[in-house]
Length: 348
Image (cartoon, rainbow, N blue to C red; front, top):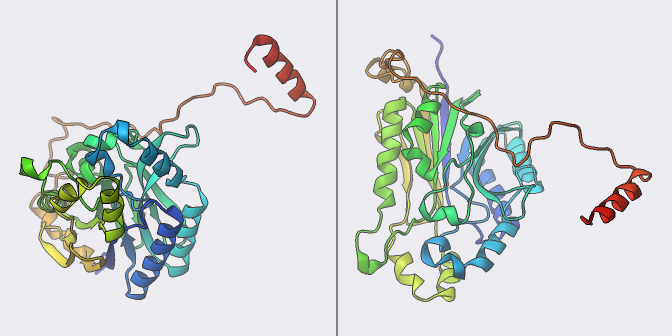
């Protein structure tokens, strides 16, 4: 009888080299090599691993953060930049699949950023590029809204892989879109912490409990395995923020640390769990275990009413301008005329 693949997966529960894309890419390459040496075939990194998660947007008013935004923009990556090429080459050398969270720069604007994720295959090809649909809460001060172009499930030799970034895992329609493409492995990526209150306010958002709940719910509904990959706040990151404002220490220390973990198609926890220490968590996914639970509830099969419900998803990539005519070809002969015309019209 034909079986679905058995896959060893890894969740990188690690801190970036805070706001240093070059050093963080080098660390990512080292972690990819380590995980592949331990037999991992699919290696997931946290949300905005490169160059860091902009947690300062939760700590201070935007009027005080202009320098941090400028630095964050400068250290963010182009999706077709040399850093992505380096990561893709490492995936090819190691023969592994890599899911990487990063802050993406726009070629059309020096100040437009997206919270993005790339899925790279074992041949070094980018097989999905997703931009977070809606930045959550204070993230709107940093990132622009994404689009539906990356709501794709990749059909690979190790299974059908999909993923969503952080709060998107609370979006029922985004999740259903992936379930409806036969998702078997769902990657959810998260920051190291997500402050919502000062300690005196009490009741800070418990992202460990929330992420565990969301991951279990999605896997239960999709009958898919789940990788929950969260970041880690190291001493360098904490010290950087506390040096800027000592009052930040109470907020950072009072916010729950995120956890990296795995769930099976019933929503039950399996494999390793990491929270308070940096490292790599591993699990084995036997994808054949996705089949039996579909008998109970198949929300994209018999357990739906397609005559009652319908979903339309726009996968168009957002672009700032749409051209209806070809770009003019500028030559040495035509450039002076263009410059002269610009000068005469006052638009030089």
